[in-house]
Structure formats: structure tokens, C-alpha cells
Length: 160
Image (cartoon, rainbow, N blue to C red):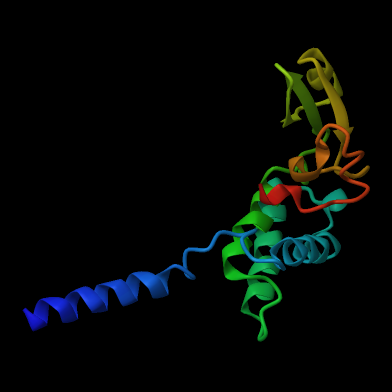
């Protein structure tokens, strides 16, 4: 019986200790600022406007995220690296002519990347950016109603 209680106690300790490991990006107070700083560092390192290949751009951003997460002290929580890379993957960087496009249906606005402005407007959307004019990522392109332009003042809404 004593062995059973020791086992239960050990398992409950491991489960309790593991809760911190499973924290999502955005659960901690500094996560949004760290992600924003990492995205800004990636923007200056990887240069969306001059990227000629989307895959290479995303790979560059991933390298920046990994570098920031491996610093001591860490500049980016490890559980937030994916958010930085996700925003790069949802961008038009390295996709010549592509635009970010905000499409509202049933009072819900979503961002899509479209081949060009015509494909965006034909889908009932509004062009919000290109690789050279800003709002190159869907993480920033479509502000919440009443929030104003999100590219002018990114707020960390991409953590949602």
C-alpha cells in the first residue's frame, strides 16, 4: 500500500511540474512583446521587400526566432518560436505580386494571401498590403473592428 501511495505522489508531482512546460505562447505577460521584438528583428534581418523566394524568407525568420530563443537569457520564449514563424508563413514575402487581403463574410473578417489585387477584390476583399508596402503578413493585415490599422501599431493580436 505504501508503494502505491509513493507512486501516486510521484505521478502527481510530475503532472504538476509539467504544467509549466505546456504553457502556450501568450500565457505569460511578456510573450506578446517578445514575439513582436522577434518579428521586428526578423524584418530587419530577412527583408521581406527583397525576398525572391517565400520558403527562403520563412527559413530566415525561423533562424532569427531560433537564435533569439537560444540566447541566455532568452529573448523569445521557446513556446513562442512557432508564432514568429507562423506569421512569416502567412506573409506575401518572396511571393511576387501577391497581396494580403481582408475578406469579411458573415461579420467575420479573415486575411488571405491572394495572387494579386484583382483576385482580392474579385473575392470581395480589400487589399491591405504587399511585400514592399507593409502589412505583408496576415498576422497584421486585418485589424479587429474599431481597432484602427493594425500595421501601424501591432498589438500582439497574432497570439490569439
